[in-house]
Length: 279
Ligand code: C2E
Ligand code: CA
Ligand code: CA
Ligand code: CA
Image (cartoon, rainbow, N blue to C red; front, side, top):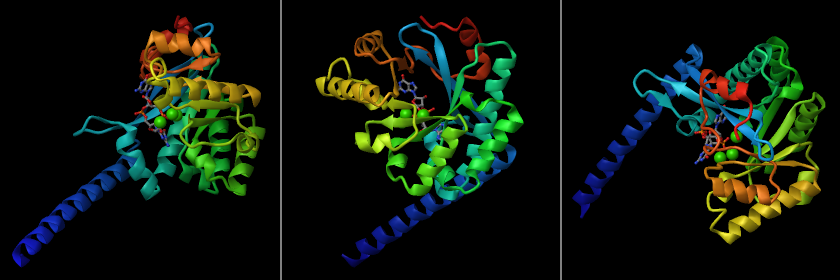
């Protein structure tokens, strides 16, 4: 009756207050983290599936906290995007990734590309291009060793402004990759308009690739489409020897995943980069 309705209402109000408070606490903690630069990057190698060589590394951000340990990007990037904090976090990630790539080169390691993830909001920022130019100049990393990853869903909302920005980045010599590819159903004609070099096949298609013929068919279609457009393909989320063998047999050139290496700190990755070959 009426009483129950009221209780239910009060219950939901209380729950909502808890949710709102949690969000506010999280948001102010994230703001503090941005000021104090309480982040770190882990790096995951990308492997040439023919030779086993490490051809690039992807930088993946983590948030260092005192109470909750290391917070994974899935637990704070969405809030960072909503609040706009992603622009500052993204700049820190870019600078730290470029700095690390340059440090590895100076230390004598084979020069490799550093792949950095971007959010839509960074792309929409008018100061983005200048920021990238400045970070490359400050860190001394040559633009051809920087790769920017943009998700397929972001690219699908493409505007003339975005295409112009992608063209400018590409003219600078920066590589562009489409992340989570296959989840957005982009068409061939549409991809041809973009100055990209690489498609990263989403890990959801790789997971069951050896057992689900639909997934195998999708991955083969992506590999062949990429070939016809003269694009590289990289398979994400490679976890088993079986997945690796199948991908190689279908002509996928590059892979990334736990089978080769989990994302790890720069120090932990150094010996693998020095050894260069993961086969
Ligand atoms: P993503 O760009 O698709 O990155 C791949 C994610 O899959 C990473 O999770 C990685 O640790 C994980 N992964 C790698 N190999 C395997 C595997 O073999 N099996 C499985 N199951 N997973 C694997 P992570 O580090 O938690 O990052 C999650 C997402 O957060 C990323 O997905 C990316 O969208 C976002 N992200 C990470 N760093 C940044 C950043 O600096 N900026 C922005 N805007 N987004 C970021
Ligand atoms: Ca990525
Ligand atoms: Ca991805
Ligand atoms: Ca993903």
